[in-house]
Length: 258
Image (cartoon, rainbow, N blue to C red; front, side, top):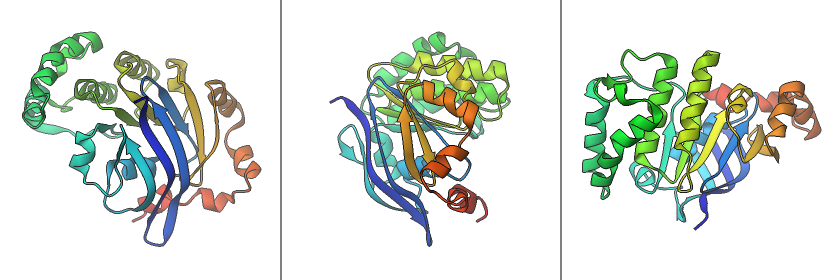
């Protein structure tokens, strides 16, 4: 099986607002795909729908490692190999990261293998010091994002969804997080990275870059597409595809007001 994630004609709405409007994307194992787009284009909604956030009505298909995810619970999705690194990682006082891994191991058939790779991956990512302190507590923004990548690497999902992991970071932290992503990459994991900006791509080499506007993928290409967007912005694409600017501002902007 060569496909980590296959999304076909994915549609999602909340109330009367349709946010995703027939989205298609396929990420192979060993590949890094990037989704870029303006505010309100539906990028974070895509994350929420893939992870099973219940507020959304979703239709279409989202298949991970050959198994349909739509209509399943969050824990089923996690067990079938989808995991997310969050834009704003949560602090968990009183529980160390090592204890979190031990608890996860108890819930998984491959728990012994999970625990066996913790220290090896910590050494590879330079994150050993995170293990015996409360999860994300007292960490800087960049350290929290690196801890998220560390957790994903230990979990070894089929598809890792990285939701704006570069947001709010200074240049040095962006580079460190990008380096952690590169070290996490491998033949048994697909990576879907969602970002507003080109800066993290200065340290990563994506296989494909996709542009999302008003709930659709309107253009795909190689890494050079991100460079083009850095120069031109999104206005030309919005105009080219005949999408009204007010339509491009719905979706996540609407949700933020709820």
